[in-house]
Image (cartoon, rainbow, N blue to C red; front, side):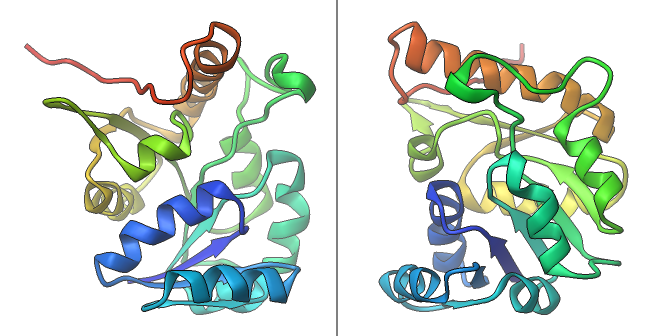
Length: 206
């Protein structure tokens, strides 16, 4: 699958590595071509770099892996995404990790969906990059919760399973209002409660 990752931060890099190893083609989009090229070259096979627009227009699946506050500008640069799947990894975190900028009556995912004609799926927002690199916790596999409004979720489910996640579909995109506070709980436990970043959520079934 052709995957355009908008952003060259830790999240985009953490997702790109296992996908490239699975044979997906990856293009990093960035405003800084040199940085994107450096990251792409460090990953080797199946990974290259370009601008936001070129990466997004080439891709079948576009991964939004930038801070939420930069999302509008990045999507504007990416151009028309009609017919494409947009994976929203963002969280609307307030400065100082003090809480969420929006919530309860809307979510970052829903606001992003208003900015674009793509099929938006929320995913990969409730864990740290270390978990993306290693989803196993003994005999248990970390859960990756996803939500969206159409069949695009099946593609994102498959991409999550390629990384090794136990993928849980929690329903429509409006349920991102539940996932983004869950991400805030992960942040609180990891950074303010002293548990560290090597933690993950797991849905247990009986």
